[in-house]
Length: 150
Image (cartoon, rainbow, N blue to C red; front, side):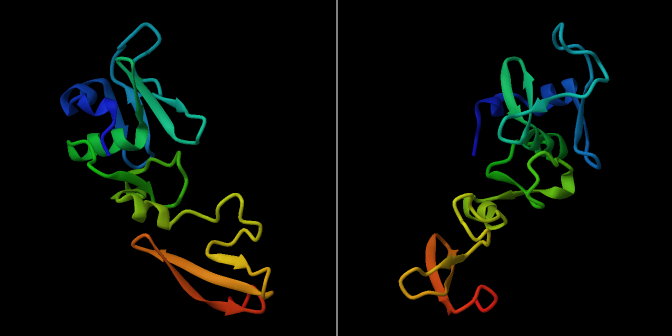
């Protein structure tokens, strides 16, 4: 999944930023503009929870930059935060994934009144249905009288 910033090269980004894989933090190597001071923490929190870094007017997701600085190439797929915490950019928490793989470790959707992934109230029959998705296909797993049985 390429982004506009993916045209920035590894050489240029690594000249501007230092990445700490154990903490997931980024630091400016030099003043790329008058707002940046060398050695300072790079990036800000984005309104959807990810950390973002602006370089040459390019807004970059920090998890994609972490991949670039660790492996020397921009990721070709999405980057999944394994623990589900969007601001946790430690290298061991990041993996390249397809859209489907990336969605597998998401929690229940906000409109899910039970707060349980894959469990839905069956209003017609009473009880609960259990479902999952595999390769984009919804699979019905069964029905149970209680949530504990689903």
